[in-house]
Length: 400
Image (cartoon, rainbow, N blue to C red; front, side):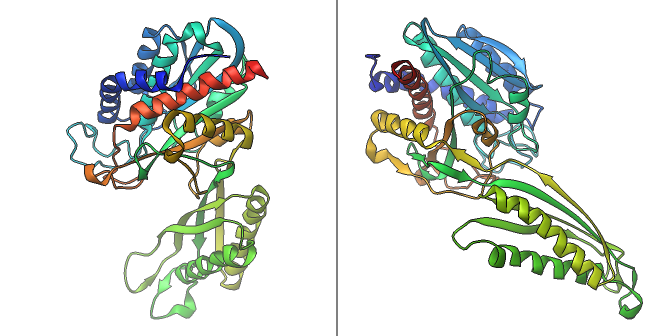
């Protein structure tokens, strides 16, 4: 049993705060989209190399770091995502994105920084580490099919085999520094819908000679909304929504076709599979009734994120030791999606929220918002909790 206290982790993380802020701001000012994270992965690799952590390039722009402790033991993994979003930043920060149309609007700059902070702490405790800690610095969380599956295909969970995996995600509307845990299904699956409805173009004043794809599309959209309200158990959660529709170009012409795009979210994999078929049946029947034709593509995305309950409880207990029971809360499931779910299909693990909002500092915008920013005090807290969780779980596995 290790005698190192949680306070030691917090103290060292606090001492690293200025360095962590510097790293985060560098990443934030130089955002990169999915599988284009060349500068970010380069910075990440350099930091890990300086710490004496063995690194390798994986999944195109990903980095795998392996820290071997000086005590025998199992292996756990810490994961952070690195990619930014195609959003033009409007924060006005002095370290705002230098790249028009690209910004870190989901906190991946903070995720990467906190994981590097955990690596700094753990590398100094190498003599006390019981086993191996892998740092999975992952590309492309924001873009299907995601970087997690590529990382897994590259063997990051093997040699040595990972026994548990941990990650965290900023939650900007939660008080900065608070940690939220949820056992079980915490986030939804995500699928993308691409629909083309084809009719027959004609003069709007002579509709009987045309087949109206706009009217057909409107009926489809209305019918799709009945899936959740009439085909899903009211105690379950799901979303089917059309978020983009494009058709026509003037007032007096019925167009030839309409394009629609949308998303489907589910917490239940069986309902997810059934709904794919139900969506097509609705589109097909409405088109047949209106003499229209259709094309449908359902791009299957990330599975629902299921946190292993015992592992989640372990991480939560550790967080309470680290920052106090009053700063830890039970999170609510949400319909957002995360490709960390792929790792959780392979090994036990958990993802927790770290509050990042402070109204006094203007940190009030939600995720994927052009004005999104975080309270940077969370960088040291996040680094400490990641390091503490990994360290303690290795001790736990040794004691089992």
